[in-house]
Image 1 (tube, rainbow, N blue to C red):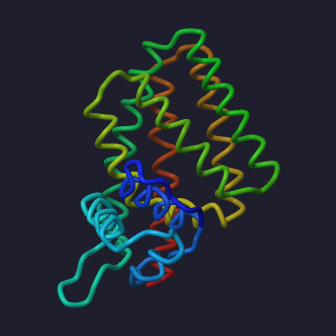
Image 2 (image 1 turned 60 degrees about the vertical axis):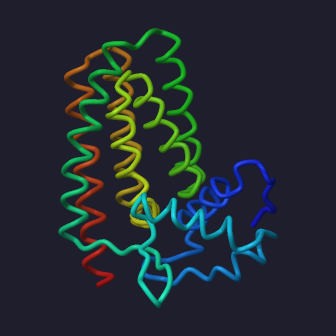
Image 3 (image 1 turned 180 degrees about the vertical axis):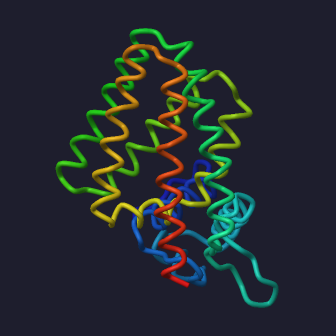
Length: 218
């Protein structure tokens, strides 16, 4: 874990905790050890507690009175509901982004896609998830809809751990890159309706894998 600069300290700590969740250094339901975080990051408890409050507002952490902070756990029902909403919103995002897409935008998407291909070839799930997040965030920005961007980000943050774990399924990992290849072609031809349908299907398939995984955990 890296030492942190004083600038926007609590936000940097919140970012590092998110990274720990993605990397599997924290698991769902685990109690957050404030003392350990303070020692490993070289900071006092105040910014750590501020970071925990940020993550609590995002739904990543649950604050339990007299017990402490815990990494949130989601039920299968909650997962299904979240992916149902996300699939619709990300599909809409793809449609809007395609309509506004210029050649330089497509080149950026193509570059991000090549990152995904490289991480897939290296069987590097952690880097794949990070590049995938960059890919989807770029589409959100390109859509030009700030509300859509914020809502999708809020939902995505809640399922970071589950998305990473879902790629441990080799079938899902290979399906994901195949779906991204199809989405890239829809963008290449500026087919907004096809891009919308493919993104929606992409999220629905991911949701089924995550929901199955949650059932097995519980």
